[in-house]
Image (cartoon, rainbow, N blue to C red):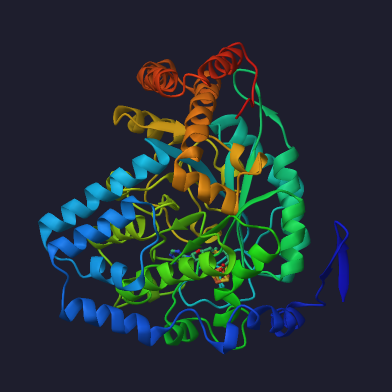
Length: 511
Ligand code: SAM
Ligand code: SF4
């Protein structure tokens, strides 16, 4: 059956069984695997890793690869494999320094801030590692209605000061594309007052959801989706099929690996990749994720807008996250972040509150660009537990490690000389996909981002910061403004005029 959503015909399903059996559209897979050949060629990837391990590259060759990364060029599989097999501590340190230098050249010294908003934990799938999986009796099932979405936004935007969300959904016919679209519309339209009386709201809604057909993605495009994020979990087909049972929608490896191809075709060209590290050998996963980015570049001219680094966390009703033979330590996690920055130099990189404060702080020093804070991943967690960090286990997917508030994290970053950005201008000005990729590679986007970071940080400080945080952050902000005056003299008068208007109480001015 079909339903009209924003004048685009999308399919509706009678019940969960109908959905499970008929959701995947084989024709929307085949066209992205030309000649039936999958872009994740396991033998080729394993061959690259083996060669790099048996004949490690010398320092000169590794430095040549680093020079290529600095030119903001995506690495070839054999080049990433060479970096993966480096063990020399001095060379590893050089790789970290290069990763940070690249991050600074593309993204300057900013961290973009966001928060997760869990909309629903209804799910028809049975992923072996996830607390939301169908049949897990320990999980209370719940989907937010639109009034509840507004209550969550009131806390996120009105009390904490967030402007950018990642909205998260289980996979279920009750939380279909129509529901996702309605929650996005609601999140954008709910404007509330900050404690100091400013009108505030959410300006960018990114989505983490199951892979969708092209028509459904077109609907999400019409309601203003930001980034469409789908984590591949594992690129290793045999592992994938073992932990995502056959007969479930998620059990279809090819439907998931082509999720972004359909998104690009639908015009949703900001896509967010991620491997769930700990399910299989990190070396293979990292190399495969670079191949995925390369395939998108080759087929559409656009790589991933962001790459996230989830790693397995304990979850209710499953031992897999503690028993997996492939769990990684913090040092390996950091290495993965560094090599990803070097391999896909233009991409945004996200490390979330799943990680400990120490691990996140160390990743800030080697190339990440986005973090969340004050996060709560219980369904309706923000409005129910607004005054404390308490989280109910039976309403959340797993347990978070970094419980710092947004204000604490902002102050901490400022102490390190880092400015927090709430910029959401990119997609509202049409700077997405290929357009933003070119701008990032040539450094143009950095200029806009720097200006918008200054303007949005000023807003947040005026609307939410305590006097102590203000005192800590203002010198960082003033230094940024001064840099704009020195490096962008033509823009500076208009930037300063916008900045002064924000100081006088105007909001949402951007370049
Ligand atoms: N249901 C959608 C899907 O599976 O793509 C999106 C929502 S799901 C809650 C978001 C992500 O949570 C998954 O893609 C997976 O990577 C991650 N996740 C699930 N269980 C996890 C665990 N135990 N530890 C860390 N991340 C986990
Ligand atoms: Fe459902 Fe996603 Fe969890 Fe799998 S990872 S059980 S699809 S919510």
